[in-house]
Length: 284
Image 1 (cartoon, rainbow, N blue to C red):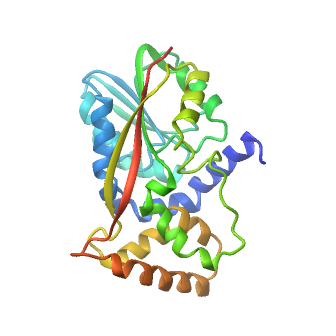
Image 2 (cartoon, rainbow, N blue to C red):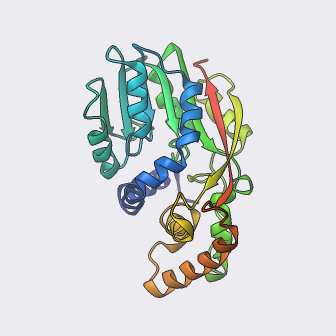
């Protein structure tokens, strides 16, 4: 098994390269698909006027802009991501918010000022640390004694059919693919509350609270079966299987996904279950 430094380096390389390119290409679609879930975790975080917020794994800055609106001119938002490509997008998005900055940095090791933040926030950005306990120990230093940590992470693949079902549908084309280790960095790395609790308490936080949120995710996003095919092939487990593959195989996979998605389309929507945890904790 790779060590934590190698795992972290792989994530930085991926999101700074192919993963970042694909995320930006899908930015509008993803912001729409994740809108309700993003709103749920923002509501749970309750960013208030005048507060200082760290948005970890900010991506293209959609949540950062909403946090900046919540904290107002007297507050401060630092949007942090390892992807230079996505940080550039975040900079553009935050241009109208002088109280917000976009910072290219690894939140797991960056020397944040101590006790700077009232709120550490993340929408699906904390499951990719090579050493999650070490990363949250570093993040813990940045939280005020009266501060709080609130983030969203995906529950199990079985509960998130919008991601797992497309990958299963095309698995026949990848017979040698290894089953991913559930504790390696990835979208489902924090699906187990016991593991998350161990990580956070070891890093200096209180035992976290977990709130379940369930919804149906529309993969078509108003674009029919072809939109669902593009979505599955651009991001998520199915997209990872396609990394580095040739056009012939990609075309075959697209045909398989069309056959899988077509019977699921109803009234222009192609819905599959999505399930998250909203995790909340405080400095111990």
